[in-house]
Image (cartoon, rainbow, N blue to C red; front, side):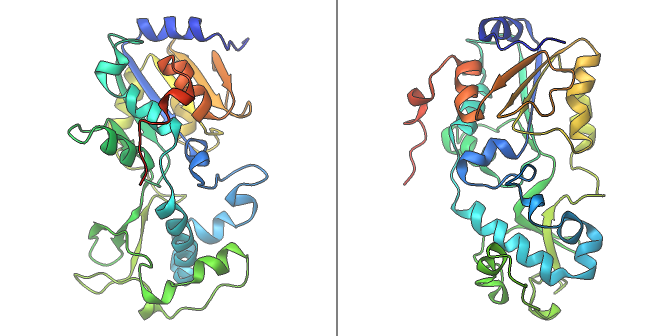
Length: 290
């Protein structure tokens, strides 16, 4: 299939659509300073996925896993939404979307755990409930391994023993050996907490709702993801195989698969132009950062 990068042609497809889904990956937050996972500079090129992002890894060495996620929390805590988040937040609003896709419903399905998409929508549109599904959970929530209590937590550090370990992780030095009792503990039962994120070999969150949305979508936007992780890698394929249109927004042609459109470049540059017909510079004042 010949990939098109014709914005006018794609916007014509959007105008005729009824159900649009966006499947977002780490590239969406790259301009906010959040490291991506794959590629030469990705986290998994430096750190071992099997040592840090599986239930077995946490069971075997919760100290090491918590230090890695503390490092990620500290990065995400300082990050701010970028123009790609703003473009999607605007597109999620019916009044904004009506100009490009007058009849359609829209849902963002994000693999990201940094919370920036939700933060952006809540900041711009505080009185609305953003159509966002965080399928891999949230960095700033904890889950008790004993009683199952799940609560928001933005403490920095999340426990005293983790203070400063982000610099150790960043420098790739040998991690500290933190005693189990000094790791984050549940305020209800005292059990060991874990990050409330979905690890490899675990089921995604909101799976039933996601598969229902995928099943009726006639347009899929694949944003900043290499589409290498299942089941997210199957969503756009499902749409394409049912005759829907797939558009990929990425800096390189990864995950294009059965795509019809490919918009090359950082998504904070391409999304405003393609989805909203706006130049990125026009959007810079929309989200004021203190």
